[in-house]
Length: 290
Ligand code: COA
Ligand code: MG
Image (cartoon, rainbow, N blue to C red):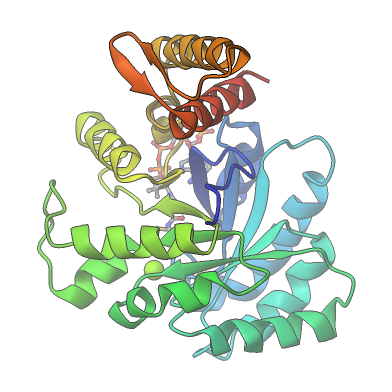
C-alpha cells in the first residue's frame, strides 16, 4: 500500500501574477507554504515576455532563505509559449513546474524532454494541474509520473468544462475532487484544492477550506494574502487534536510494551493504523510549529 505522503506542508499555496511587480515582491514575505509564480491565466499575452524575466528575478531572490515551495506555472503544451517560459525560468532553479491543463502522461513526457534539454541537471519536480474532464479521468496515470510530487486542482476551469453553476457546496464537483484525490493518494502524491475567487467572502472561503480538509486535500491554492492564514489554520490539526494524538500514541506504546496490539483511548478502539494516523497528525502539527 502506498503510504500517505508527508513530504512538506502545503496548507496554503499562493498564486502570484508574474506580470505584477508589486505582488511578486510582496509574495515571499507572506506566510504561505508555497508560491505559484504564474505565467498563464493571470498574465496578458503581451506581458508574457516581461513576466518570465520578472519571475526569474524572484526565483533568484528567493533561492536562499525563503522556506516555502517556489513553483512556476507555465502555459499549457497546446500553446506556443511554454518552451520560452521554461527556457527563461529554469535557470532560477524553481522547486517545481506547474503545468496547466494536463490531460495525459504524454504531456508530462513532452515537458520533461524539453526541461532535460534546457537544464539537464535541474532538480525540478512537476505539479500537473487537473482542470478538465479528461485530466480527471487520466489523473492516476498523470500522478504516477516519477517527477510528479503534487497534483493541483483547477476547479474554475473544471467547473466551466462540466457546465456547473457556482455552488457553495460544490455538489457537481464532488466526484471529480474525490476521484483526483484518490488518484493522487494511489500514486503517493500530495494534492491541493482549487481557488476560491471571491476574495472578500472570508466566511465562504473558510467553509471551502474545511470542505477541502474533510475531503483529504493537503491544502488549498489561494489568490490573495487574506486567504493565507485561514487556510493555514484549516489544514492543520488543532492543538486539541494534537493532544488527542499524543494520548493515542502513549497508550499504544504502553500496550505494545505489554505485548498487546489493541487498546482503548477516550472510549475508542486503537489499533496500529490509528497509532500510525495519530503519529502523522502529530508530525504535521510539529512541522507547522518548526
Ligand atoms: N500575491 C501577492 N500579493 C498580493 C496578491 C497575490 N496574489 N494579491 C494581492 N496582493 C497584495 C497587493 O499587491 C496589495 O499589496 P499592498 O498592500 O502592498 O499594496 C495587498 O496584497 C492587498 O491587495 P488588494 O488591494 O486587496 O487586492 P488587489 O485588488 O490589488 O488584487 C487580485 C486582487 C485578485 C487582482 C489579486 O489578489 C491577484 O492578482 N490575485 C492572484 C490572481 C491569480 O494569480 N490568478 C491565477 C490563478 S487562479
Ligand atoms: Mg486554469
